[in-house]
Length: 354
Image (tube, rainbow, N blue to C red):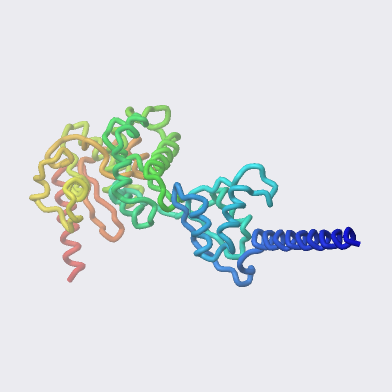
């Protein structure tokens, strides 16, 4: 009788233990596979995982944002993913993720291991300097402006691309980029420079040539970029500058003066260029020195690059804006014709303002 009672007691204990294990397993599976919210009530949450964040800290971040039920369970499944029959732990990548509260713990782990982050779409217009691009990147929280500029001036990186200059000014191709918050500035620079190299690889005057061979073309394109407003006039403006370079005369480009004022001297963009500005002692002052500037003054797009690489043969040595609404210029062969065109424009402008 005692043995029978003992066996029953053991049986009850084993049954209770088994029931406890089943309940724990069910709770474990529930927390792992069942999301915090239903699809109907889901919320979309932005989760930022900085580089070097521990798995425990990631679990804490997700718990605080009410995306998981248990920090401990998330950590255990990330490190020992037995429930998903994996042999290796989840390798969570840093970045910024868009997580829905209707996602299960396993789905969140899979997302963060995939590295499919939230991207920032940013359009870099033609003609910006690396400083202005840096400001845009900082405003969009991609990286700090100063860190971007430092990367642009990193001589190790510049030399790696065999660019005969002290920065990547001129080689940061204007385009639409999909970046991530807190992105490494050097990675951003490489992305833009590699894009530049790819874009010009099929352009006559660039293809099959090294960067050092076409560096001066980029310098010219950077000035053309800042001068033209109507695309079809870019080649004509390039031809004017080419003619002046061949005659060893100054380019007389106001864009170079603006570059000195804003990028070298760090002053606000001027409303007008004064005669005093034209006297600034700088190798970038094309009113004082003949030929090209020492380096690019902007980051040109394909229109200016193609114009600078293949300018048409013309007799033009001058151009002046004669329709501010359309942005078109009058091109002249002589200084007297250039002066007359300017006088006509000013007279017309004064008459229209009355």
